[in-house]
Image (cartoon, rainbow, N blue to C red; front, side, top):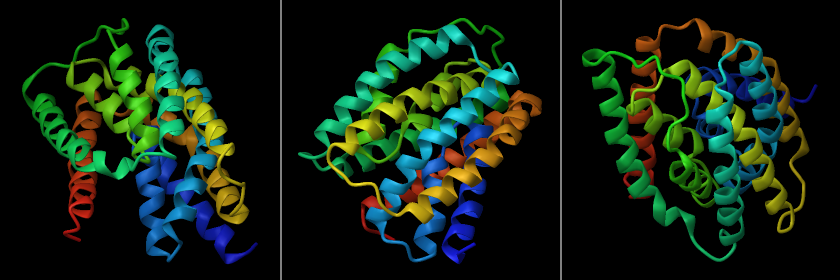
Length: 249
């Protein structure tokens, strides 16, 4: 086993544990580790997107097995998410998605603070019925493709901030993400060649191994604990993204 493949497996494990448990940050976690290892940014972006086809699929099935998915909410998220994702992937070749990052990061920092505050001051809702999530899913799919990430942070954080149960939000968002990622990747295939196979294979293996354990954690962690972890994660990651976008790091 080559060192690159082994490192990519470990990175995929870490990324999927975070994403499958808290509903976000697979791409950010993997990208951060791969950048630290000296991998080129362009190689990282494409490798993560291709690997997500497989990791989101296994993650979604794992969440279904652990009964974390509200199927009505998942469907309401998946269809507009696919439309937004395909549109964003198509426009990415003609528009600089990085221009969105400071605004998205600012929104997510505020959302993270609100989610953390709500976990301490307001009861968690127990209603698992779908919400009016179509505009949210459209925006999440579009920003995920154009900005190189954002489906989990935007969609998960907004639904949690509205008071929906973390377990069902995270499970449903993960399940819907498979369809969004698949259509994005298929769109990108028209413009890019498949390469970086050792990194892609390692990310897939690590993510697939970690997905069932992450779904189990999502089921057993207390709702308030999950909301606090999501809030802190959003603030930390979004602050880093904002500083990088403003070239302060």
